[in-house]
Image (cartoon, rainbow, N blue to C red):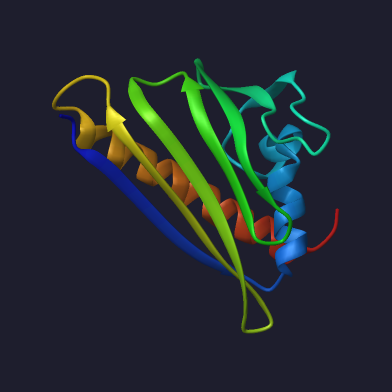
Amino acid sequence: MAKIQRISVHGHTSASPEAVYALLEDREHWPDWSPMGSFRLLSKGDENGLGAVGVFSTRGVNSCEQVIALEPGKRFGYSLNKGLPVRDYRAYVDLTPSLGGTDVHWHSTFTAAIPGTGWFFRRFLGRVLGQMVESLVARASRGAP
């Protein structure tokens, strides 16, 4: 049985949890503030956006992701359906009010689809999530566009 890989990245912004959540919920504009490439919505999901499926295209890699958690001001979650040789990829961004702003905890789990590559994808995706948190915190701290 493949080992479950875990990634956990933390950050802090002066922005409110609601402001940070608004940035996360608006995946179409992630490329404006993050290292992610273009975004294309494939399906809208339910009336709140839960279950929505979209594709980020970044440096030749197309990542098909589905929204799996929407808790306004508290949590945003998604799964990776296609794009990398990993299985059962789930990521959550938890937002906690703290010190006049928000603590951000972006964490994920997955198993490697190719035996022996879990360490590589944990390191690679750890760097990506680190960049995502850094970018999210910086963008949120600048305030409304």
